[in-house]
Every structure is written in C-alpha cells, then in structure tokens.
Image 1 (cartoon, rainbow, N blue to C red):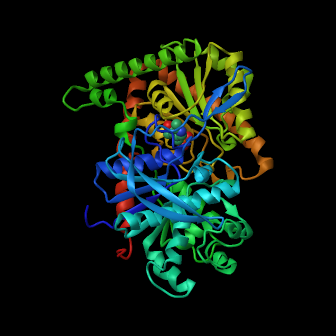
Image 2: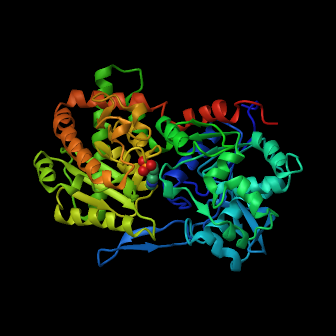
Image 3: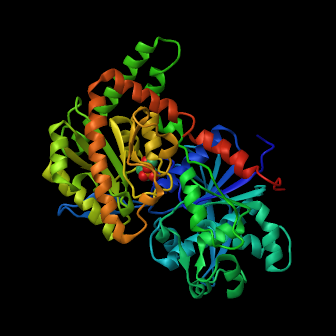
Length: 549
Ligand SMILES: *Cc1c(COP(=O)(O)O)cnc(C)c1O
C-alpha cells in the first residue's frame, strides 16, 4: 500500500483496550479500531492523541444508589516514553510536552502527548474534563503539539486526517507555519486544503463545539491569528466543525444516512469541503468471538455449522449470565430471550424507551423477555445520570427480568455483544450518526433490533438479518421538541409490537433463529469491519482527487 499518501490521524481519544482507559465511547473505539486495522493492513497511518492521566470516569453505583465517578490513574505499562520534546503555548505560557508511543494492542504507530511538568498536567488530567477553557487547552496540545511532534520525529505526512473537530488546531498550526506555502491567509488555506481531510461525527447540534473568539484569544496559543482571520476559518463564534469543513478538501460522515444529514446540516457554510459518507466498521479480531468464526468454517456441512454456532452462542450467553451473577447476584435464565442495550447515556439514545410502558413491559416479561442494560453518563451530564438512574430503578423493581451493569467499558461491551440474544438500539432518528455496538453484535450472530438510524438502514433486511423498528420516512423524524413525545410513544409501541410479533416467535423456532444469526454474521463480517472501512478511506478519502504530495 506504499502508493497511498502517508496519513497523520488526529483524535482526542483512542479505545484500544479496557485496561487503557483513554477513551470515552464510540468515537474513541472507532479511532482504536481504525489504528488496529491500519496496522493489520499495513496502511501508512500514524495516530496522534493525548495521554489522559486519569482517563475517563470509572462510574459506579454508590451505596446511596447514585452514580459516583472515580478516576484511577491510567496505567503506563502499555506506553514507552520517547526521547523527544515539543513545546506549545497555552494562555501565553510555554508548555513543554513529552511523547509516548503505544507499544501494545496495535502494530501501527500511535503517539500520545502529555505536559512534561506537573504544573501543566491539569490540561490532560481527564478526558473531556473541565469547561471550554480546558477543552481549548486540550485541543491546542492535540493539534499544535501533534503537528510539531510529527515534525520532530521526522514522520513524513502527505495528508492530515482530523477525526472530529477536536483536531482543527492542527490546521491552524499548519497555516501559521505556512507548511505548504502561500503568503496571505487565503493563499495558505488554498495550499493547505489538498492536504487535509475531516470526519464529522455528530448530527446533534449541541455536540458540535463552538467557542467565542474572545476565548480563543484568551487561550493565546501564540499562533498569530487576528480575530478576523480566525473568523475566516471557523466563523464567529468559532465552530470547530465549520473550521474542519473549511480546512479540508474532503469531509465525510460516518454512515450513508449521516452523510445526508451532515450535508443538509452544513449546507449553508461557504467554502466547506464536500461531504461524502464512509460507514464505520469494527475490528473483527477484537470484537468477533473466535468461537463464532470457528463454527462457520466452510469445511463442514451446514447442519454441523448451525449446531456449532448455536452451541457457541449458548456458551457465550452462559458466560455473560455468570458474569452478571458475579457482579449483581442476579442469575438470568439461559433459555429465555435476553435483550441487550448498552450505550453512553445521551438522551437522544432513549435508554428508557422500553421500560417506560409498564403494561407492555409486564406482557413482555410474561413471554419470557429479560433485559440487560449498561451505560455511562458524562460526569457532568445530570440528564444522562438521571436516565441511568431510571434503568437502575427499573432493575430494582423487576430484579428477575432487568439487570443494570455499572461502568460500561470495552470489556463489558465485548461480553454483551456476544452474550445477549438481541441487540436493541432505539435512538431518535436521525441523531445516531453511526453506532458501532450493533456491528459488534451482528458479527457475533446477535441480530439487531433497531430504529433505521445510523448504519442500520445499510445492514437491515427485516426478518432476515434482524429487525427494524418503524420505517425510514424522513417526515417521521423528530427534530422538534414538541414532536418528541409523540415520536417516542409511536416508537415505543412499534418496538413492543416487533418484539411480540416477530422477535419472540422467531426465537421459539431454533432453525429460524439460527438462520437469522447466520444472516447477521454474513451481512456484517466484511461490510461493517474496520478493514473494509480502512480500504474505503484509502480509496475514497485519502487517495481521492489530486494526489496529496
Ligand atoms: C462499541 C462501544 C461503544 C459505541 O457503541 P454505540 O453503538 O455507538 O453506542 C461505546 N462504548 C463502548 C464501551 C463500546 O464497546
């Protein structure tokens, strides 16, 4: 793949392993899987990130039933300190940075920056910690520090990939240093643009970060831009997404539907890169259980494969049930349908959709349904915490049918996406950009039961690979506060009806169920793998249009 441009990939978080908690959720796990597949495929991609001293919250249910956030130190046994230093400026003060190289979990190169001195360590103390000022300081380290680190290391870069707007300070640094030539700002922008691509990740407006120009000035990174120049790049107030779109020659959303949503959402930004779609994928060696692969090897008759697949599934389900019993003291039944739902507690994901109609819920329980929930809320997201509180309450009210597992992390994610029977996803369409936990489930033969949002319109063949909840009519989408209650009720009723009329009857017929499991695996194994995703980035994003060199 040496003909491909050499790519520097910038991301705020990387989900490589649950023992190395420098990730919060989907964005990080995507970046981790990106680096894993880049290594497997020997694609010339170098990653840059930050070393988060206390990582992201370890979130447990306290003795009083409320959520408590704990911050153990991030272990340093997976990283090796490099013999280089770079420097950035934050609030007019010089901040020397040291660099670590990740030595485990991946074969690609990933470098993580961290302030050298204790007094500056507040910047990288906690992932997504602090307020706007802290966030900007973090972004200065990632972007400005990252570009300077690659220079110092002598890593050749043809193309900079900003994974989400957190990285746009890298663009500002490249403009400042006039890396690709040009004298006026406009000229430098035109020269830089062929060397930048940008991935946007969120159709939730509040998820797109903006900062007052006054604050950008106050954070003084010593890059020499006037307010008027900053406005040319990111608008006023300065939007990280707008800046990303203007700095890049090409941008992408993370599923076909999200590409459409993003094009509509950023339609009025002048000078923005065209937005295409590259659907996310997951790293199969990480997320697909080897026993699933072993069951389906081609050299045995189909009935043997089916029997082995079902057996492997029951074993994995028993393992999950064992883990749940060890953690909660509650033992679920291995022969009853187990629905899984685990997410970050963003309100648009509607974690409480299924449990908020008690009568319908009682009917499901009568028919043998069990539900396992897990989730984590951002430490300062009181709404998200309240949502998780509802799940915990429901598990107390229905201790035989509902369990909640605290501290959702990659290990739990892996256990749940191989040990449940059905994977539920019910966001308010079209707010789920992609979603990747469903891909992990699909690869393990756990069919998705999902709203046609994110990646699911691409993977769903109703009744064959899994099930849809409702249809994909854009006029049904809930953009509007006052529509939400109506849409939520409609989706809840649809969800209950699909479970009763389609999922449960299919589960009662072993042969039918196993054929759905097989179809789910066949649908996802390549199309929703990060190997396919990397190939798409190489051909459709990194290698597209003028060769960047
Ligand atoms: C896969 C995964 C995610 C992302 O899944 P979504 O479907 O986007 O919610 C988040 N957190 C963990 C721990 C995961 O394993």
